Length: 151
Image (spheres, rainbow, N blue to C red):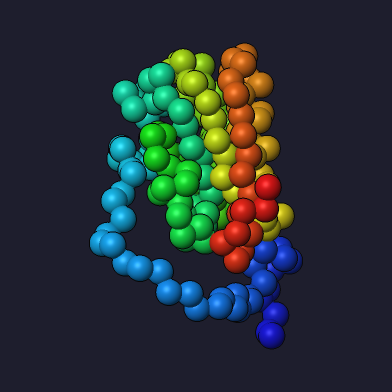
C-alpha cells in the first residue's frame, strides 16, 4: 500500500470483504428524505423542517457505509450532513447552536464513522448543544467502515 500523504488512519485504503447473501428484492426502498438542502453549510437555521423536529446530524460517509441508512436512521428526522475532516467547519458550532435554540428540537442523533477524524462532528454537536443552553436528548451512533453499528 502506498503512502497516501496524510496521517489520518481513517484515510487508509482498505478492502471490505463481504459474504454474499441473497436478499429478496421487493422493489425499490423509498427515500425517507423530508427536506432539501441537507448539507450543514446550506441548511437555513430557521427552516420549517427543523421546527419541533427530531434531527439527524450525520457524517457524509455514514449513508454510504450503512446500507439501511434511510430506514434505520433517517426516517422521521430532519437531516444535516457534514464532514468534520473536509468541510470548512468554523461556523458549524454556532449554526448548530442556533438550530437547537430557535426550533424546539425534540431529539438529536449524531451518526459518525468509527474513524478518528469523524469524532470531531460529535464534539461540535456537543459544544453547540452546550452553547444553545437547551437540554435536548442526544444519542451518538458509530458506524464501522464495514457498515456495521459499533454501539
